Image (cartoon, rainbow, N blue to C red; front, side, top):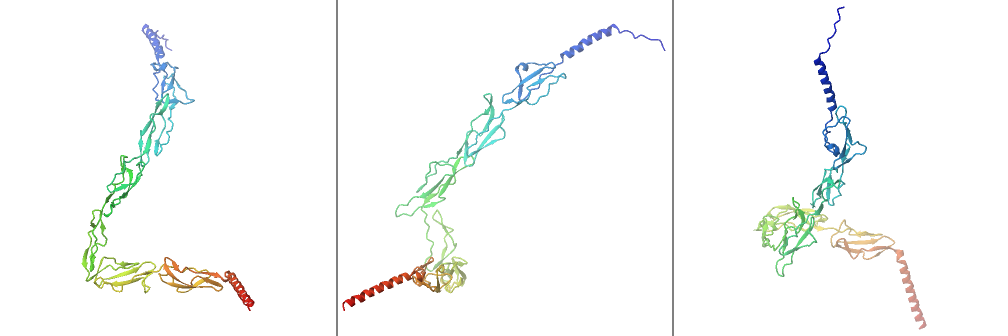
Length: 416
């Protein structure tokens, strides 16, 4: 083993260095602090902590809820500076205050998504109504709490100005003119001996509204004017050629123009037929042209057919033209009797039937009756009654007869 060597003692400079460093380390530890805690949206430090810039480990601060918020029960309002110079974590201990639910809006709607501080409620009205007041309110801080910043609006029915007056006419009156109010126009009576006024346009207009929710009338009011068109009738021996339907317009002219009149040597006007239609339907037919005439329901030609064909023979003459006869009456129901003559599925005016009662029944009324239209008969439909119902009357008649005969016989016996 080699000789032992003694480690040299530290020099004076090293000792001095240790003396200087150790106090500096202790001072650094003594000066380490927490910075002020982060700012919270829902709470603020109590006033006594709000001006401090550093907090030694172990320091505790407390909070108060900001306006618009209130404390959550069971949650701590304090935080502590830890040895690691970090503030202790915290749960949200203040929650937003809530405004009351707005009342329902008559004739309108309330739109609310949240009631907490800072939220908004909007309003709208149903069709035909408009808002009077604000369309939006906000939940704000008020009197150490929260409340809506404005009063609720109203929904008013959209008004219209009074309906326009018209010359030679008048309209119905109303207490007020608001959405859906209708007025009807009527023309005045024309002075005696003059042509009457005609109503041109819609007789009724109603209060509605435009895109800006201003009241307007649905259309312009009508006019009362004298409308008089020239008679389009042709002279005898002439027939019309032109449009089949024309209308007398408000300017007293025909639209389309009235037909012209053509001499009817080789043409025919439309055949005039009652209770039937002409196929095809035209104003004028050429000579030799044929048309089909079809009777209406429950109607036939005298020979029983429902249809027939006729031909224009010129000079406004048709071959074999006949009218349809309609049958609308039904056979009357006779209790305890029947129709013995003239019965048909339906009857025309003038048809007669004969009625007879079953055995044991007596006919009260006329046996033969005549159809007079609209399912009515003349004389009235008779009835059949059981013979036993009239037997008492016969017995009474016999008794009266016998009494009279006895009195007659007695009178002559007393007088020889």
